[in-house]
Length: 127
Image 1 (cartoon, rainbow, N blue to C red):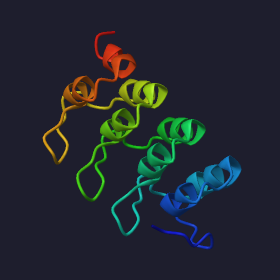
Image 2: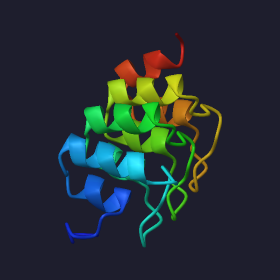
Image 3: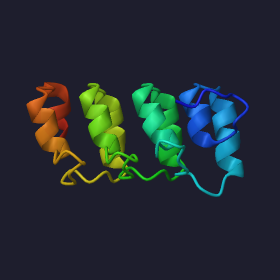
């Protein structure tokens, strides 16, 4: 995991839970909202893993790709589902996350939500 706060890349700032203003400043300066770190993780992936709803919203509102897989092929919406993040799942779907897209393990978001028995998340797919 990146841990160097001096590394100003967006994934590193989010991973290290930098203040929202610092993340916004990096977004304003960056030409690539979807830049990835050495693991193939973007700021959005880190925000989902760290469960940072304000950062997730900021990144999606700034144009982060809601379908960008990690280097290992995990898709953002499935990361949110696996951790039971209802609002993050909703934000991703609203931003255009493909509910039929399979991740590297062959899981679609809807099937994963049903398998993991997240009733609140599963309901999002019937709205």
